[in-house]
Every structure is written in structure tokens, then in C-alpha cells.
Image (cartoon, rainbow over all chains, first blue to last red; front, side, top):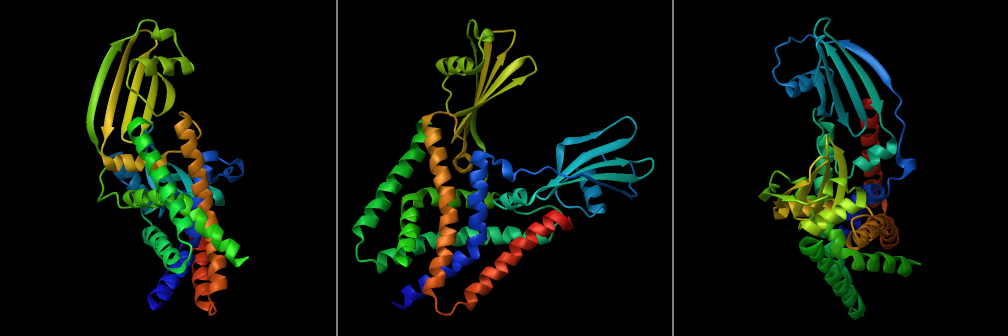
Amino acid sequence: MRIRKLFLKVHLYSGLICFWYLIALGTSSLNFNHHFSFMESKPVQEEWARTINLTDNFRDDLVLSETLRDSLSLIGWPLPWETWHDSTGLFHFTLQHPGKKYIVDYTFTDKVARVQELPRGIWHIFNAMHGIGRVPNSHFMSIWQWYTRITVVLIVFSVFLGIYLWYTGNRDKKTGLYVLMVSALISLGWMLQLYFYG
Amino acid sequence: MFNRIRQIHLFSAFILTVFVLMYFVTGLVMIFEEHFQRKDNSVTTVTKEIPGIRVVSGDNLVTAVREHFEVRGQYQVRQGEARTVISFRHPGMEATVVVPYHSDTVTVTTRKKNFVAALHHFHRIHGYHGGWNYRIWAFVYDLSAFSMIVFAITGVYLWYKTERVRWPGWLILAGFTLFIAFTIYYLRYLQ
């Protein structure tokens, strides 16, 4: 009985730890399937510029993008398919993270980086929490990455704990067991069907 | 009320356990991608002459391609430079079909994926398209997503009704609410 009480506490408190992640998973998954218009946002553009001293000896555009990102104290992933040079000596790249998109134009002649910021809406960020993980150049987001990892492990553990708690605390086990077995068979069968014939 | 909420928490979990578990297990594989590598087990390319295919378009083109090649799953049609590209995907397999505008020679490249890649695909299947089996999947996906919200809310209610000493729970909830709020604030305003 002591073990059961302990497991119940672990199950309850795991649920509280995972509460917001479950909500984010639920809403973002529904949004993937339906693309709700109220979750889309129209970005309001902001612009600023900063002088960055860089020499024109970068052979790799990705390294150059990352160097500029770090010099500008920005975070996010440079997008290789939105990166180019032009004949005037302009270097253009786009940087992205769940909260913002940055369009950066750097000119080697005057050493100025002109940045256009396109912030995203709260819903976009909340839904992106589903699977952000680490964001380059951000120490804080490493905490989020660890929270995600721990939460997913806790949820899997909690599901089994929940089944154990139900099994040990319920007199009528038959109905639940039938529901569990039938649903498990149908779900697994469905997955196999898609894998082999889908 | 407590029993009713408990039953909702319990039976929604029972009906969707395997599905929800699948999402979290495949999620773990995705989170720890450095330990679980995706790769192609084999890549094969087949070229075939299908008389008159160049004048077929839309759904008829997809049907014609399906009749001549072993391709299945959800598909996406793109118009490229002088060619139509149809990508078929189902867990474990990806096929890219190229139909030129000015020729009847169709090329199909099939990539058989390893099990890890198939797990990634299971996690990512969504949308009400690709045939009846994918529509049913999308419906169960919706149910699973909805059930996650239900688990979370009913779970908090059950904790509140079960525990007499509630301050540790409130502390955890408040702490993680602040953490989430600060993460959103950080991504939206600080960076």
C-alpha cells in the first residue's frame, strides 16, 4: 500500500510538471492537422542596424552567417536556402527561431549589418514548444531542451504508472482490461497496416 | 463529480494509450536523434515509358502513376521546371515520381527507410488526405491531441481533489507556469 501511495504521488506530481507541455502538445498537434487561422499572426516589421567589423575572407556562407549572428547577439538557425551574395558586395541571410525571423543584410564596404525583425505571435511560439529543443547561441533554451526531454520520459513513465494504479486500485478490472486490449490491438494493427500496406 | 472526471481521465487514456505512447516513444527517438540515426536502407530508380502520360494531370496523373508503379501513401504534387514531381510517402518508404512535360518517360526513385526513419514518419503523419486509412489516422491523431489536453486538465483536478496538502503542487504548477511564460517572453521580446 505504501508503494501504491508513493506511485500515486509520483503520477500526480509528474502530471503537474508536464501540465503545460501536454497542453502545448495538444494545441500544436491540433493546429498541425487543421491550421487554425486564429493561431496565425501578421508580423510587424522592425528595423535596426549595427556596425560589425568583419573581413571578407569567409569561404563558407554558413560560418559567415553564424559569425554575424553571434556578433549581433542573436539566436536561431541560419537558413541556407535564403542565403546569398550579390555583385555589390552585399551578404544576405535569414535567421530564424520560434519567436522571430531576422533578415540580415551585411555590406563589407561600410561594415554595417541591417536587420529586419519579424516577430511571431504568441500562439506560434506556444505551438513551436512542441519540439523546439536547443536553439543555437541560446543558453536559456538548453534548459527548455532538458525540460522537454525529462517531460517526455516522465509522461511515458506516468502512463505505465497510471495503468499500474488503476490495476491495483480497481475491483472491476475486466472492463478496463478489455478496453485496453482491444484499443491496443486496433492501434497496433493500424500502425502495421500503414507500415506494410499504407 | 470526482468519479466522473476520474472515469474520463481513465478511459480516454485506455482507448488512446497505444497511440499516445507511440507519439511519446517516437518523440523520444526524435529528441535523442544523435543516438537514433535515420538513413535509407536502399535506393532504387526505375524508368518506364507510359504512352500519353504527359497530357494527364491532377488526380488522374496520380492514379495513372499508381497503376504503373508500386507507390503508395500520402502524396504531394509539385510543378517543377518542365516536369511534374509527385512525392509519395508512407512509414518506411518514400517515392519520388518525375513526369516530364514533353516526354512519356517516367522516373521513379524509391527510398526504403530504416526503422528509425519509419518511427519519425509515424510521428509526423497528419492531415485529412491520402486515402481512407490516412483520414482515420488523422481522426485518431486529433483524438490523441485532444486527449492530451483532457489528461492535463483532468489530472490537475484529480490532484486537487486527492491531495490534502496542496502547497507543493501549487508551487510546481506556479513554477512551471512562470517557466513557460518566461520562455515565450524570452523568444518573443528578449531575442
